[in-house]
Image (cartoon, rainbow, N blue to C red; front, side, top):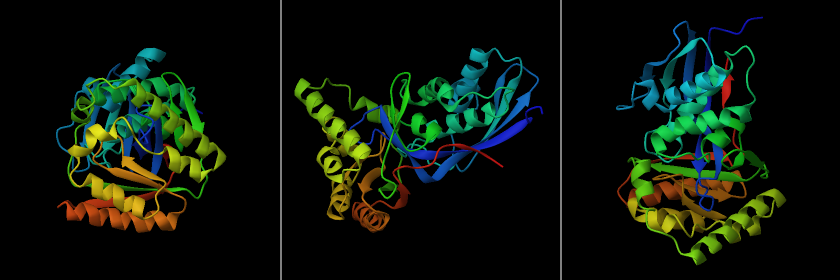
Length: 309
């Protein structure tokens, strides 16, 4: 049976960095996400047909759009004679720190992959996803696209995706304040060099989080889930951050920090009920700083991108 002429795919949002794993650790989120509709066309090009969802300013030139750039890379690598036309329905706010640019390119790749005569394994889409996401972030890193592609908590190296086991009952509360923080602005805050002792401390923290997840040892995660490198330099970019983080910790969080480049704030909990309670407290803390916000609660081991029926 020949492949279909068009496909739709949904990619979930994500928490990039997870505090201690800058550019290499992330997990997917249940709930918000982007949808891409991809059609095969006879012209050997990739083009953007539409972008919907209350967003403005996203490029319609395929090479400057994360979804378009990802499919250009896919076409070139596979030597495809056909082209692709893409429609995006955005469900993730721009500049939210929830992986919106990554979700667009992952959704487009998963949809386009379903149209191939011989679809690729999810891991084989990784390099194309990083290429696409780099259009928005300015660099190749997989902490958002990796978990979107395969689901859950993922260690995303330059050329490999390593799923990290997490207890099913562990949940994440993420609260997105109603303002945008551009990834490039957030990355500029990290320009100054880091001291060696800071790197060593962060390495120890990351190691404890990874081992704690694999063992299901919440005490290890609590000991390690503290960002010693990035958070101190970005916290001032997020109004009310200190109060929001403290609200999560007061509610029993194993740890809390900035989601991706911000301004969303995430916290991990040992059960869903605690995450729900904390999310409300985090919303209240943002309100004290004069900001409205939207809460999301998800298993840490969230879903992966999927083709929609």
